[in-house]
Image (cartoon, rainbow over all chains, first blue to last red; front, side):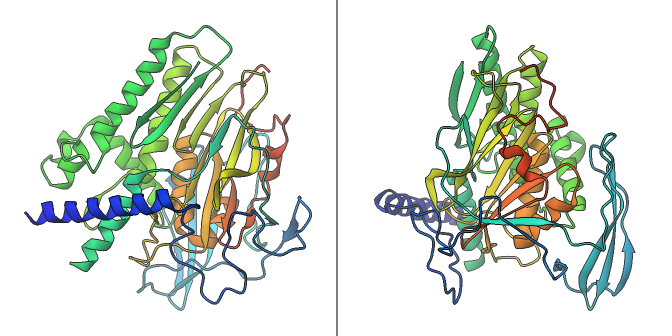
Length: 166
Length: 259
């Protein structure tokens, strides 16, 4: 009975949401809005950020901080070597360095190797990522890649929220 | 020949070009995808996945497909420091992997049947082979997370897979396993290109759960490129990504084509 009620609530929520979705002009902006964001929320335009857009190739950015992955709490400080894991082209083996219960660095002890292009990942250097403002491009493409357009995902998300409300 | 069906609650498109096509071969792939749905769909009470989650099937009796997918989930979790999570609330949900895994299987079936120029697109996770009808690399647009009718990047691909994780379609469905209950707000879209769609899908899922650090992870692992869009509309991409924006590039080391 309880399950029936829960399923009905989920279904009703979904129907109401679908109705709202059809009425609204634009798809919903990401559910959690940014806090204290000086820039306006993105709308129909594709350049919601700065007016002086960088060159299309973008400006190389070298991040100054080594990213920290937040693990589950309760890790001991130290250096920990993982098992070698089969990564399809070869093995990956990493070593995690933990300080103050946070992973502060991860080193690759083993990584898959390409015959023609050997890459050594230098853990001292920050990765060279590039940034740009997004801009509308030709719609004349063979295929489009976007996040799953699935109502199941919505139901799953909502169901887990309702589970917490129990 | 191009066909689209709704399976797994999403549009799945298969297009084959450049040679005589037997329609039954396309149907065979769609039938396979429906079969996968009946095995893994957690919203279907009679699926093997649902029955396993209710404790009704012991491990020794799990199907080969189930064992293969769950082993891949475990492997992915290890390779991504736990950011790929397939267990939630005591139940298994392999959604982040099954789609890419099944598309890859479908593509292999087409290759076995002798087709060399085709793609399979399931809800934006795509595997491409050979060339399009104009004998060019397949052109793939990355959807604008803020406007579903626009693309913000055009890529030219063959012999690889591409997957996009995002939280802009009807709610957040990727969770940070280290902060349960909190969806990941900073990144709205992460696109990953890998040697095939199974690889791209599993790492896109995990890297998306890492938030803005996910793109660093993609940069660090060999053989993948990524394009991340944040909620301000700024994209960050990996150092080897740009080659895919060139229409004539043949830099994909997994390609085996005659253009």
